[in-house]
Image (cartoon, rainbow, N blue to C red; front, side, top):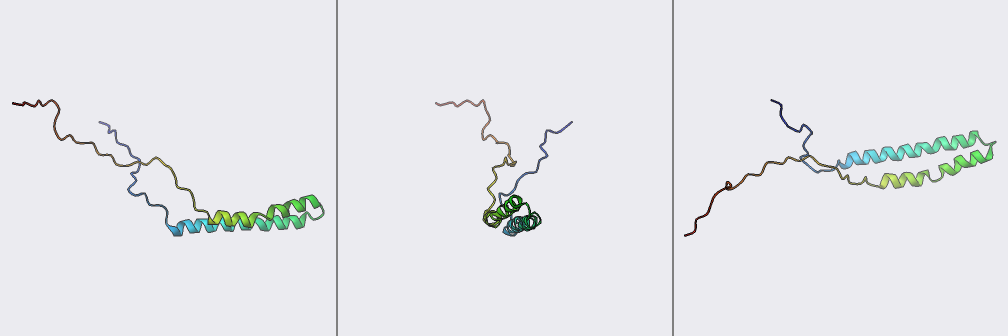
Length: 103
C-alpha cells in the first residue's frame, strides 16, 4: 500500500542566513562590480582613436563605484515563500452523536 506522505523538507526554523554568509555575498557583489570598472577603462584606452566609443566606456565606468556601494550596503529582501510546516491532525475532545439529557 502506497503512502500519501509529502516528502518535501519541513521547515523547523525561520532563521535568516547568518551575518557572515550575507556579508561574504555582499563583498563578492562589490568586488565583481568594481572589477568590471577596470575593463571599461582599458577598453576606453584601446579605443582612444574612436572618441565616441572611448567616451562611452568612460561614462559607463563612472557610476560603477556608486552602484557597487549601494548594492553592497543593501540587505537582501525577505522572501515570501510557501513554508512546509508540520500540521498534526486535530483531535476531538468529545465524539459526535452524544445527546444531553436535562432533567
